[in-house]
Every structure is written in structure tokens, then in C-alpha cells.
Length: 307
Image (cartoon, rainbow, N blue to C red; front, side, top):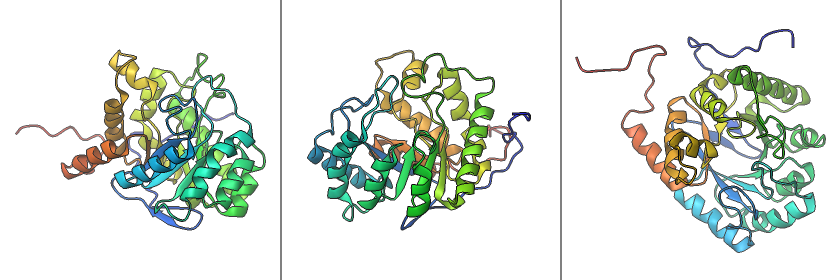
């Protein structure tokens, strides 16, 4: 790279993405973020591993998330927590397909498949999934980009330094916001060049994926800068380790810290939040919006105070 990575400065006014075009429908993006409910059909995910491994338990939880107000359901069959071991595609399919087949065409909200394997994504899309949520930003499997082009699936491109097996081994950045922005810009451009339209692309800075505490906080504070990419911005702060680090308590209940992060991201216009606790976050956002928390403040303006 001969040029320093560009990312918007404090006087930048973002280009807001108004819709996310999925495979067969469009999601309108408004002032309040949409909520992507997490459904991990795994034995070892960092927060809820094993809770929904049995297909009926997973199906029941999917309906519960929809009833709580989820706008999207994200189903994954392989943990990507730090040091998690890869899962063969056939095992991943064995976990997720019974759930997808029980929900597709019945669940009123679109389904996202959380995978970096094209074989898994293909069967999930055939069963009715609308979105490919790929932690490798479509780099993990050479067949993934052609699959997205052929099927018209929406894609979420996430930043990760390293792999789940290596990402937390002392990750380093000179400018984490600029480097993540530049990575997502390059992946966006690669997707566009391959034939994936801009309106089908979302970007995710990858909180907790190859980041130390200071990196996560910098990205949370500057998520608004990603709007310059012209895509919906999706962020997943839910129950992540940084919350316990901020609180100084590794055993803290991270749900409450998730709400704090969600409000901070909503204030920056982040359009989609990936969360476990849909009802809690949705209620917080509704009150935050009603109290004026989503009203625009001119960049650089001082906070209002008593006169």
C-alpha cells in the first residue's frame, strides 16, 4: 500500500444507506437500528454454546427472537469465538439444516446464514436463507463470491485479523479505525467488481475479532465513519469480552453492557445490531429514540447545558 488509508474525518457528513436488498426482499433502514437476533446451533459458542444445539430448542428460540422484535435471524453452526476449532461442512450442515428447513417460509423475518463455507451457504440459500454473513468477508472459500453473485444473496463483509484460532494472539494495529475502514473498502470493491451490487452489501468492523480492548473501543466510538462506504453498517457488540474488561469484572453479566454499546452505536446511525438479547435491546432503543437520543446533533457542536 503506497497511500495512507482514508477514513472520514470529523467534518465528514455520511452517506446513509436507506435499504438493504436481500435475495427476495428489501429491508428499509430507518433511524432506529434493525436487530439481527443470534441463533448459535453449536456446542461451544462463547455465550450460549450448547443451549440450542438440539433442533427443536433452536426452532423454539428462533420464534422467541422473532416475537421479541428481531428483524433478522442469524443462524450459525460453527463457533468463531477465540481459539474455536474449525468444523467440517457436513457437521455444520447437520446442525443448521433441520432448523432452517423448519423455519424457512414460516418465520416472518429473513434468515441469515453465518458461515464462510460455500457448501453450507448454498444449501442454506436453497432452503430459504436470504443473507450470507461471512466472518472472512468472502475470502475463506473461493466459491463464495460466485455463489453470492449467482443467487442474488445479500452479503455481510466482516473484518477479522487472523483466524478464530489465532486472532487474539496479541493483535496489533497502527491505526485500527483506518485499517479496518480500508480493509472493508477493498472487500466492498472486490465484491462490486465480481458483480455483487452495492445495495446487497453490508459491512461489519468485527468487534472482538482480532482486537484488543483499545481497538474495540476505538471502533465502537468511530463506527459512524463506516457510513462513507455507502453500505449498511452492521455491528455485533453483544455479550463480548470487552464489556467485562470495561467493567473490570470478567464475570459480569454482559447483557447490560451490550445495551450501552447498542445505544452508542444507534447514536452514530449504525443500521443493524447483531444481538442475543433482542427484547432488552429493542426496549432500550425505543426509549432512547422517544427521549431524543437519535436526534441529529451537528458534528462538533458542544453538548446542550443549562442557560
